[in-house]
Length: 366
Ligand code: F6R
Image (tube, rainbow, N blue to C red):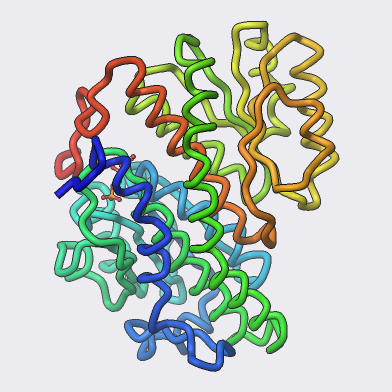
């Protein structure tokens, strides 16, 4: 089943051009001028009227939710709150009838997410699910939902499920923006074009795996690693760090780059790899200054950059280049080299990549 791949995780990383395409296929109209989310058609009028959207998840699914928060607030202009299901379910949150609660879960069986959703349902919210496993508990509980069509994910570390979740959430955000009259037809078309270009761009990133492996070799013995990003790439920093720590057991922290000077900068020395996730977005100059701060303290910079970004090229110790894209979809590209980086480091450290210690594929207990 793994075919030519040594591990499921590697196979699943390499499947992403197909799984992203499978996830948007049939949801983009032939003329590429509209998005159709079949599972949400009946409830969409309610979603358009929502006062607030609350998105719940755990782990990697929570990271996908964060990307959605940025997308929905920027383009559809609906207030969004993202929360760990495990916190939400116990802290007596305020849920109003006009709220829409969306759960994100690959397995559809995560106990905390399921319990949080039940609570929201009891309190009168419309509850939606974005799940990968068809017929799973969350998919059955929700009023409506959208499946990610990533196929079975066997590796414990989530990879293709994350990019499929972000794909669905991106379609959802732009559909909502359109239905709320917040973006015009040309802008929608432009974003649809951006989405259609993602699989080919992921393909080109995957071709660079020998380079990513060589960089992993350089850093495999580090004790700590810091991942920084801003805006749409802040969740990617969190996700990159989670991938590394869960499969290689190297301590890694993801941080919003602007927070670096409020604490984590104290960690920087010549043994610390700092992965900086960047794009040609509004934050570019700020990211440049973050890198200068790390370099001034002799930290090692591994920069994820858009191709042709010669500015960061001269400042970074190592580069993972990804094709250019609109910043709003850049998470789908920039996460891929970080998945591979974590994979190769774990492999070189002799870890069981597909079955990391202490972890289960689906967390059906609290
Ligand atoms: C990380 C990972 C976990 C899951 C989390 C939620 O690689 O796989 O953090 O993302 O346990 O699982 P689901 O999405 O099945 O609810």
